Length: 305
Figure (cartoon, rainbow, N blue to C red):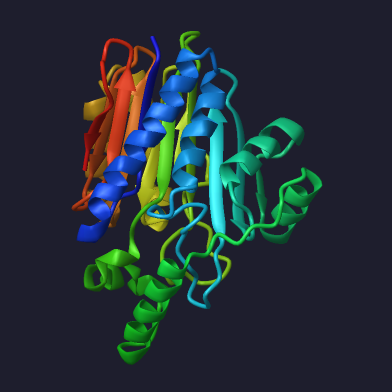
């Protein structure tokens, strides 16, 4: 059995971005699944799927990622292989096109799991990653508008982030993720993000935290999206995969994970999951979360917004 599920982040999409987001997740799922059909491993297919999303400026990952309070673009990503529990992650790295590929290099070329900031950037240079500016004019314009609104209102305090997102739902959008099952039974999950709009410089969210935003086992894989501070507190991705390993179907496991997060920390989030039989699941407590999935036996990608 081969299967792919991807997400384009939870939150509230602006009307003009809905079709772009639906097309983006569909293209990513197709790219990953076609790679599987061509004989690619789950690891290769997952990287391909996430890179497709990172290269699409509609999403908050790679090109078009959101900006920090002071107008910089700091990227996080992680990838994990279920059979070996191998993982690589990067946090707060700047001037790179595809952080998911850097996360994979960390997994394959070092003894570490997570590199951050300047150290991650130096490692990227060592590995031959070219300098790249992921900031788009659309994101810079949004940043200027939101920062102006913020500075005209109450002073910025991080513990007020949920209130800010209720006032400005466009602050939270677009983290991307992909979970893949190949015909050998391998499960790989990858997640990539620019974080939350107007985040403090140096903030790292759930995406590169293994078990929080990204997790896989021989039984299942999951990728989360939303306010990382809540996702980290309940270790959402691992919680969902643990539910699946205990026999809960992925759809119910995803719903249970989001329900638990909502009840315990009351923050915005979404999650996708996939088990070793190719069954998929996803859930959110936000208005939107573009999801696309396909597996053997389906004649086309199914997209849900």
